[in-house]
Length: 189
Image (cartoon, rainbow, N blue to C red; front, top):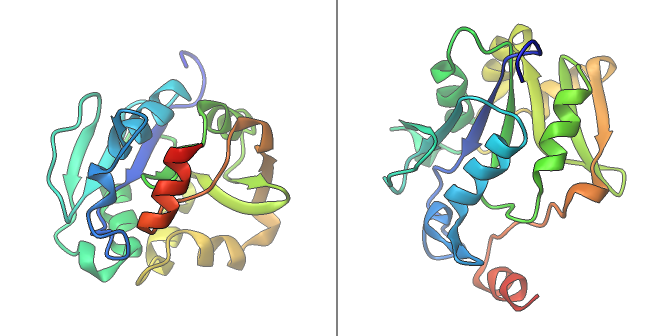
């Protein structure tokens, strides 16, 4: 994105996948680990660099900078804080994605970036889901409210007048993988 905003990508992939029975970062879907799919989603969507927050599993990830969250068991909030803190200073904003949503396409990331908003959230069927774009001006506020197993949602709710909703129905499906049954259903498609 030469000449455009410098947008980093942040993939949250630290959880143990307790309901799934293994860390989601290691799960394979369509011959690719979820962590690698997430990195590809962000990179193909226009993000550079891509930072991956790991915790329960430590893996090598090509095409990304990895950050270990020692407090990963405390929930997604700690991973979001660790990832925001690891972003390079030149990143004007970041697109945050979750490793367990393999059906979201790079078009969703491109649409968020194209919105040129301080806060933008992808919507599917009119419902807010991921990914989410956060400009640097909001990093501290998002980090402050990202506690336990919640990410940016409390900050977005606290500032509805600043949030741009970006319809992404044509850019994939936000279904996530939390259980073996959901993974089997997804793999059967």
